[in-house]
Image 1: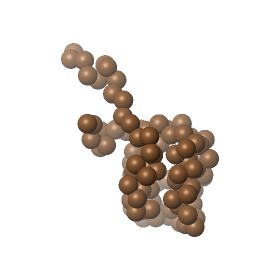
Image 2: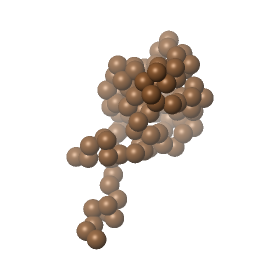
Image 3: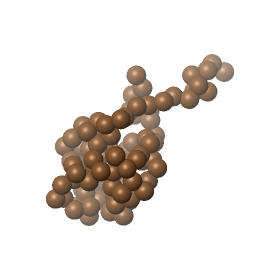
Image 4: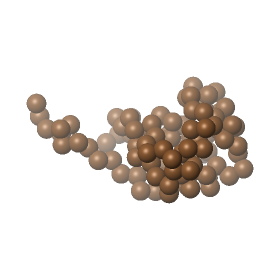
Length: 94
């Protein structure tokens, strides 16, 4: 297993966006953005909109794990197909 702290970006798709939107429920994007800012993570409500609409190809682990914490859910609830692929270059000794 690879610790999530080692991963900088995660792939994103429309399914993830639908999950995020559903889990967000009645909380506004602005509210989520403000809560993220209070937690020291900068993320605009426009970026949250792009995530929800599947317009983003990837998301930083810092942002999505902070969103999961704010929404009080496990990351896997937002990203049900979460898998980490490691480059062979990363695993090959120099």
